[in-house]
Image 1 (cartoon, one colour):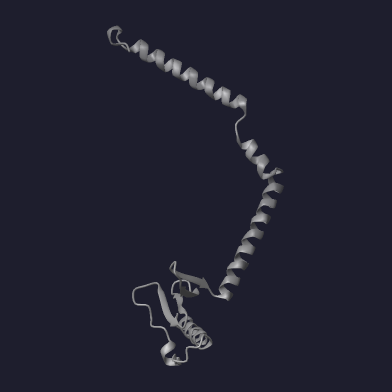
Image 2 (image 1 turned 30 degrees about the horizontal axis):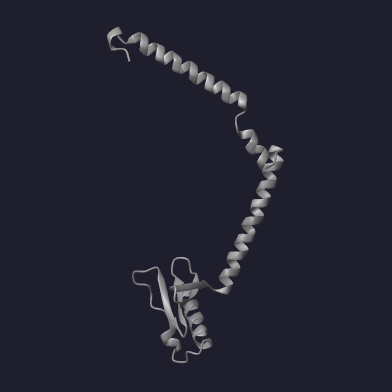
Length: 148
């Protein structure tokens, strides 16, 4: 965590100097350790830099009319894009393996998962038979004066 805090301090100082904030000195740019919250924030000329102390994600935040908008750093965005690309490739690979294993496309597997008309009619027939027998049993067991 200390290494991450040091990296954040260097990043904050570089960002502050780049944005034209010469009033920040190296000793002032080190972030305070988080007291209760998840985020540690450092001011910049046009907003602030936010460090997520749980994940290590650094974002630059600016105040707009609609509210505060935070954007992840460029290297973190590249990491997110790389992860999205990897997951998309894995998804394509898994779909191909599943199609090879089952010999069917995803839409064909869905069609085969649904019951046929014959199976539906057979199930309804069973339900009708069950209900008729239940009604007969209730009718036969109820005394004649108390029938529904």
